Amino acid sequence: MTDLPDPDGRPWLLALHSSSDSLGVGLQRLGATQPERLENFPLGRSLSNRLFDCLESVLPATAWPQLGRLAVATGPGGFTGTRLTVVLARTLAQQLALPLDGISSFQLMAGRLLAGPRPPSVAGPFWLLQELPRRGVVAGLYGVDSGQPGGVVELEAPKLHRDSDALAPFPIHPAEVRLPEDVIQLLGFSAARAASGLGAPWQPVLPLYPTSPVEALPC
Image 1 (spheres, rainbow, N blue to C red):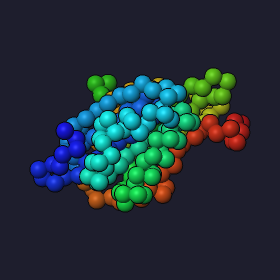
Image 2: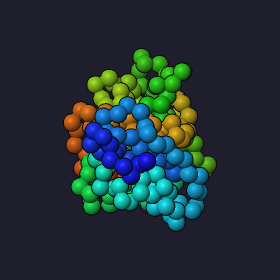
Image 3: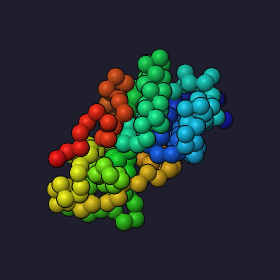
Image 4: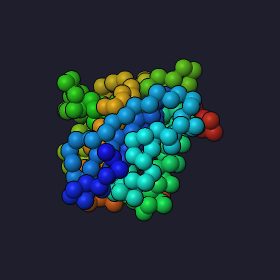
């Protein structure tokens, strides 16, 4: 089904998310409002060996010239999984001359929470926080902004803190990846940026590593 051209000639939007133990892949036509294909591959440590096979099971390589835009979750997440998927997305964007949207996994969670049945208060910013044993916490700050694609603004990118006491006094919500829901958010963010006519060069899209071993824990 996915290797056939669209009757209207619309290219594909491909989204990749590997900020957890699973690889999420989403596919929809640019200009469409719903994904046509969503897949979740619980690969764990085998992602490096099966990444291409999983991608081709969703969109065969023969159909990659039909791509019109790419989106990838940049983390925080596992070092290997996030790095490999971002590198793959950058390579495809470079070789196929495509725009690439890189969006943090925390911002995707924020979008999902705001669109869910129990959204955080829209009166002010809120934190998303992940606890790391013996390392501290990774937290990012988010808010509602209807003028931004996706309706969410990342006020502070996820970074490492010693503990939650170091955070400004805003509500805190747990940072938990959920697939395929976060892949749907990734498709939505990228589609909104495309509809707004925003460019998306691949060069600035890099994995996000708040717990880099070369950086000291904040005091």
